[in-house]
Amino acid sequence: MDSTLPAVAQELLKEIRKAFQETSHVPDDLLLGLKFLFGPSAVPALDLVDQRSVTRVVSPSGRTAYQVLGSSGKLYTCYSSCHFCTCPAFGFTVLQKSESFLCKHILAVYLSRALGACQELTVSEEQLTSILLAEEEDEG
Ligand SMILES: [Zn+2]
Image (cartoon, rainbow, N blue to C red; front, top):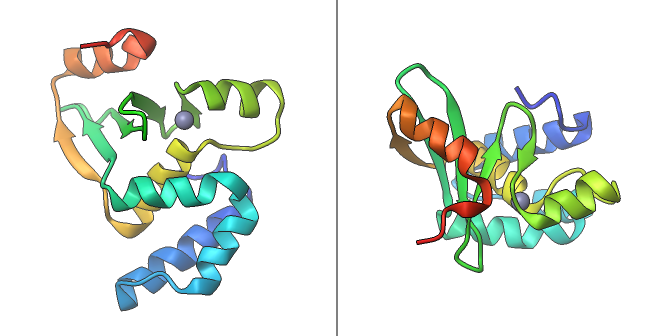
């Protein structure tokens, strides 16, 4: 499922999940590993996880998307299956410049999954479709 991530990142997330299940705590060396691998995305992503900003949205047929409430109060949609986020940083630093392989929202999704910190929301097929198609226009 996380095949879009480099193996070393998958390993690290696995370690974090295991450590957290055993101790309810993420050890410092793994946090350092996150910073090393994900650079400037690591700390903001951990903040998003702390604030429980990640919601897993599921439809009755099992389609899934993640919504992440950004620090600016804007809601971004992350697609776990195709490794994509609707935020401007993803478009710029990941798609255009290839400086990074994810944004803080996608990292927050992976971390929330590893730490069991996702909120759950069940919606109808129509609602999920409109979430997936809404992109920028869901003001108000
Ligand atoms: Zn993003």
